[in-house]
Image (cartoon, rainbow, N blue to C red):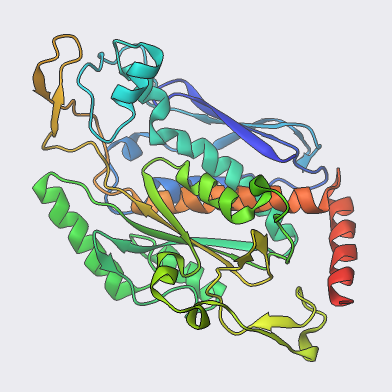
Length: 382
């Protein structure tokens, strides 16, 4: 099974990602991982911490002469701001954070013990793991694109459905908020600047699209095999995500069945493609039916709440005295939606890669490729 774990604290020595079950024989692209780490640090609205850190991955195991060995891959990201033992105690919980719930769970009087691990700084390790998975997917023609659809109620008018993948990546990477719509992106930046002046924070909407996933990833025979559920869980595990939708998402509750379900057609000229010639002219299902990929692009969106740490502190309580007090203030972002889009892209990439490895197996890339080709012959023979 392909899986990963992370370790490390926000102001500890480093962050660690350990990936198990990764096939042997693939050239590991450290530069691509570092590019994704840099994207995670970017975007308008980030706080001063990003001026301190310069995230780069160091591969500690699982690779020899640049090639994966099939053994666990351990990646390290150093924290420049290593100050965990010098930082003051946190005794006034911040609403919207894990501070108070974590203190109750573990019996901590100092909620910094919660903050240090619950912090979104941990997502740098997840981006490293997800970037590694995305490299694996690319080896088999599967591409993943994450970008911002809206910030603070300002929504775009251009999505990945309107342009090709290369154009979409170019538009996203040229935007200060990782949006495909320049006019909307400028309006989002204006919104962020207004929020900065008000001492507040702002959330937004993120979309991730997976292109080229073969039909048959996931499963319908048990609840925990359903890929839509697994993707939703992966995305909801990202700090500050509060809602997930696939395809039309919540909009399906407002439409008739005839307006929702994607009619099936057949085109013999496409019989050598991923789906053996079967196709859908719409993709309201977001590439997933019955918990299984159907060969259409997988489309998943996530709603991110505003960052809970505000310059104008919300009400809280002093833990020891139980008296009212303003919530503690920590160094924080005003808007982290662009950065979070990189994280959501990473966790979706990993979950798709996990389903891919489950389906096609193989201890090496070559074996996985043979298994995939045999399966596609089966699909095309229907």
